[in-house]
Length: 343
Image (cartoon, rainbow, N blue to C red; front, side):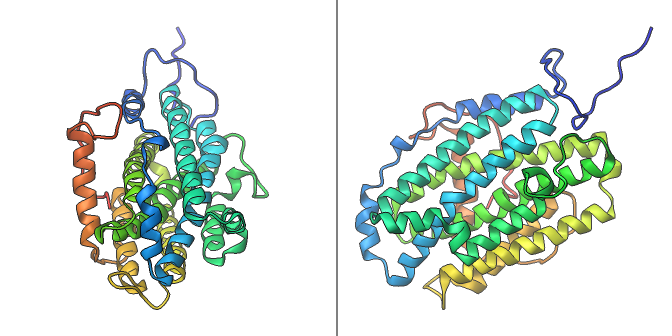
């Protein structure tokens, strides 16, 4: 009698069988995501319009840059979900979750579209924001970083990979996935969240903060799922996680911090009360170290989080999310969450 060979998560193919379930934790993440449902129509942006008029020119510039980044950031994520992750993570349980994540990214895009329509009433300003990847150097650099590290999978590289046939293919896929989780969702978005919560800590832009709370929860779950995939690959193929991969990931995080810091210089200029380039540098370095620790790699910077409002965000929002029904969410979520890598 011939035994059926054991299949691994990154083996080429398109596994369809949900029973027996090989990766039940991915299925539970899908079920939790279904319970975590919100709509853009629940976000009230009316008070934000009055707040925008109170902002200084520097603060208005910051908000304009933020919404320009938001307008395109989730589209990069969505494309990678469809063109890479769904294609190569060979687990029907994981693909259920990724299908749900794609829906959530669409809600985020709708939220940011609504932000643009509300915050930038001039059609020319809105058009410029949507063209940010081409027209705003600090946003273009972040996009180019994403394309460099994910080039072989998103169709922009010379060697687009259709099947993970070799060890080198799987290694390159891992770099794509880690860039996706640790750098884009885990650093670029978390940097943007810090600016939003800085405004909230001053009693401003409550609508933006409310929508960002819900995006924050979604993105934290997306990042946690991606890291779970990395953990599974590490268990099934530990040889991929060698010193060379550690060095590449460390270099990747260093590049991501530099790109996000360039964006921070654009947003902060000479500095605003409670927010400047140096404090953002420390924050980004702290977050980068947390992502490296989650991957089991040594810290790079040793910096401390300078933003107490982000410490509060990491504990309060996620604790509320998992321990009680959030007032504006449609369905409750039960369970626990580790709070050592959230902000």
